[in-house]
Length: 340
Image (cartoon, rainbow, N blue to C red; front, side, top):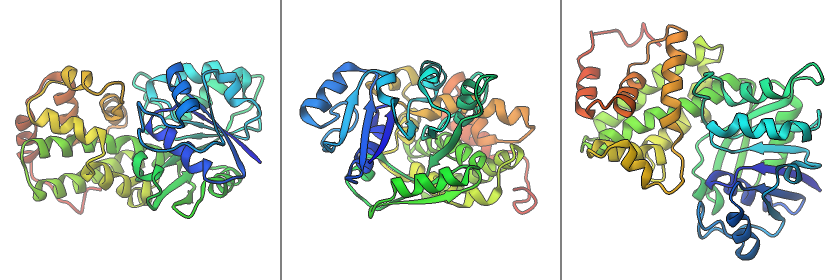
């Protein structure tokens, strides 16, 4: 019987608990920050706040205590919002064993440090008294609702620890949930984070009433600038052609369940960000935070990311969406093939 802890009972964390709970060989503990979510799951077997209507298997135990959640777990899956990752792992550190495998399923960057989530976790755990953690990143095109209801879904686990990658692949795979392995955590993590910004841009286009030409151009050029930054940070360009790159980008730019795209739609319609956030009722659109970190990382690596720059101006500087698009379209002429 495999013991697995999931830290974060939002939509994706809850969906992963359902996926893992389909196998009778798993015992899953799902940690939620809100006590009321634990109580609702325990009584009704549903997370009404973040994933309503999806039955959570009996082998999933909700809890509100971090030490209790990770005690004895062979795999700890972190699915908290990126801005909470550092604080939560600082609390978990004393309770994590050296052999515990950590899987980061958070698609974001830390705003101040510009770190990927596995970098944040490694920085916290590694010290004079203990080695770097066994860690990997889980990403790919995966709406929580669709994975929870059993729609065929394919994702990837990226790690330089081949044994960890194989173990996660074996434990997470199901007839409706296919897991591939990947040796490029940099590319997989950055792909999962950066696509959120492009998805906001896709939503802006939709909110402005623009058509498929605009969406296709945005996705293609968005992938190009994502790839530039991935390579500059030491990742592989080919990773961006896979599930955590192109796959996740297409999903979040075109799918109606994308929270990031939804934020962009409302911005395109003229609503202001604070008003949009107030209506999300605790749901998180990671791209809002990631955009600032992505701009900082791109500048630090001297990488040109015009779409990301314009999204930052819309989100955080009050720039009008139409003005941002005009600026993108009237940039100096360039070669497509001589630039990644």
